[in-house]
Length: 233
Image 1 (tube, rainbow, N blue to C red):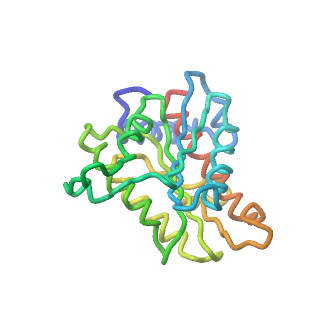
Image 2 (image 1 turned 90 degrees about the horizontal axis):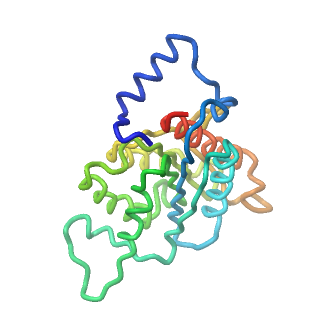
C-alpha cells in the first residue's frame, strides 16, 4: 500500500471516478489493474475458540480470498489470549502477568495488510469484553502515527437470534475503528448494509443461516475489493 495514501486522496479518487463514469462495479472490481499481494487479517473476538464467530469469520475471509488471486488472508483468534484493556488507560500489568497484545501490533501494522475484519459475538446488544479490550489496546496504533490509517475495515457480528443486536454491535465496533483513521466499509451489493450479520441459533448450525452467510461473504468480498483499489489495482 502506498505510504502516502490518505482517506482524502481515496475519496478524491472515488469522486473523480464517479464523475468520469469509470467506477468499477462490485463484480468486476477484483479484475482491474495489477500490483502486488494484499493481505486481509481477520480478528476473531469470541472467548470461545473455534465456535460460531470463528466459523463465520472464516466464511468471510474465504470470500475475500476468492475476490482476487492477489488476496491472502489470515485469521487470528483472541480466545485464550491475555489482553488487558486497562493497559490502555495506563494501568500497569501485575508482575509476571502475560500480555498477548504486543505480538498483534506488527501483524496488523504491516504494510502488506490492506484490510482488517473484526468479528465479535453479541452480548446484550454489544461486543464481547474481549473485543472491547482489543479495541482499547489499539490506542497503540494511534501512538505510532496512526499505523492503521488508510487500511480498510469491516465488522461481522454473530447474535443468538436473527435480530439480536448485530447491527448495534457492528456500529459500536465501527465507531472505535474510525478513531484509527481506518476506512470503514459494509458488505457489498445486493444488501449493501453495515456488515456481516449472522444468527448463531440457526437449526443445523451457523452455516445454515443463508442470510448471515451471504452477508459474511459480501463483507469479505467488499473489504478485499476496496483494499485492492487502495493498493493501486
